[in-house]
Each structure stands twice: as C-alpha cells, then as structure tokens.
Length: 309
Image 1 (cartoon, one colour):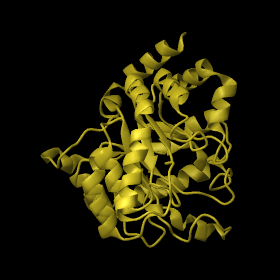
Image 2 (cartoon, one colour):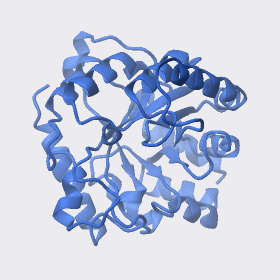
Image 3 (cartoon, one colour):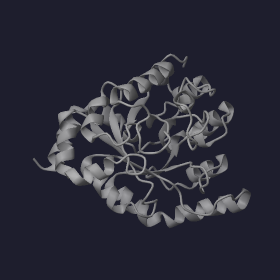
Image 4 (cartoon, one colour):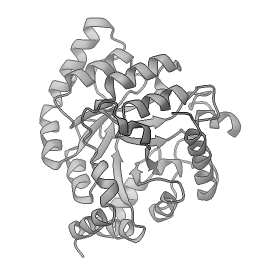
C-alpha cells in the first residue's frame, strides 16, 4: 500500500484528534471552551534512548499520547531507524499501532537544512519540525531585535517550502543561541510571517520564574507549536544520581507548574505538549526499560492532571 494511502487511512482513524492537531496553530483567545482544555501529548522518542521505533510506538497509548516525536542522533536514533526501514515500513508501523507522527526534531540539520525533511514530514502526515536557531549569540536590546529580524528574513525561502508542504517550523528557545532570551522569543513571535514559523517553548532554558513563563505563554501562545513540560532541576550536562537527574521532570523539581497549566488552559493552547528531560549521557533512555520510562512519564502526567486549572 502506498505511503500516502497509509497516511490517509491513519488520518481517518484519528480524524477527531487530527482536526485539532494540524500543527499550524492560529491565534486563539480564552473562550468558554477553555475550561474543557486538555493537553495534546506527544511522546519524544529520545526519552527511550535508542530503543526501536516499534517498541516506542507501543508506548504511545499507555503514555496517554496522540503522536510520536522522532529524534535523531545524538539524543536518540529513531530518525536514522526510519531511514533504514524506509517510509513504507514506518507508515505501516504507524498504521499497526493506530497512531501518528506529530513532529520531526532535527537539530543537526539546523533551520536552513530542513527542506527535504519538510517534504518527508508532509508525506508521513507530520505537521511540525523542531530545530534551533542560527545567528549571533549574547546580543541585547536593539542588536538582538535586529538579529532576530534578520534570521526570520533568511528563513523566507525555507518558510515558503514549509507553507507548500503544510508544515510548521518551530524554533526552540535554546541556551547559547540567538533565540534564548525572553525578548528574543517575543520578537520571533512578532516577526513570524504566519503559522509556518513558530516557537518550541522550553521552560528549562529560561529563568525558573512562573510569572515570567506565564507572561511569555500569554503573549506568544498563538505562535507556540510545542510546549515542553520540562524544568531545569539540577541540569542535564553533568552526570548526577538518577533521582537528581529526574528533577527535570514535572512534579519532581522546584518549578510550580500550576500557574503554567492554568495559563495554558486560559489561552486554550492548541499545540503539542511534550513531557521531557535529557539524560546524561545523551542517547540513553531516561530509565533502563521502556516500561519504566513510560511509568515516569505517566507519573508526571498524573501530576499535571492534578493541577487546578
């Protein structure tokens, strides 16, 4: 069966969720329906290290997720596995487990090297690609604003491909990059020409200040494609005892997600939510077995579900 046919069948099966899961988020205001808001969870393949794609797809339903986010080396190797098995075999696995691919995360290629990935995403039914920014670092004020404007201008031919493919390019606010500070996030949202350029919002890389985080989400939710339920904890660059490494997860570290969750509900956030952390070293699962990884994700999900909206 052709890949496009498989993707269409999968879309029929997931018609209800895909109607909301276009990935091309548009501005939304708080409405009466906001009280019924539910996060749309996506499962990051890198949480499982280099486990097989099929083993990870089996975890999507138990983890309460709608879709998978496929990561490449060094964080995982599922993107390489996809290339090895081919699009047809991958689409058949999605069909077998009645799920979808929500995102391709691709830091190695960068924002200017994703045109072929955009076409792949379109063929497989994915609507989002996540990567980092390129440009000068450590700027402030008008220099930073000008650099963000120039970055968006340089992206124009790539965003044209994204529009044609029907996908969103989401830039993570990553440490030591152009899109790092709160102001740079605001400017990226401001200069974005449309829903094809959005933000992958990572609290880990920002001050662990709920007022700041909530303010940014209120300002930029209409240009946010992915929200990482991820806090700094004790960091992710130095090897720590596992209980300290897991402080990045919601409900374990000091960051109070209740105001953040309330803000997401108030703005009726339509993008993906990804419960997330990085292990040390990269490329290993956050816990030894797939079942244990899923159990930890579900612990975090239960914590978030218990927060007052």
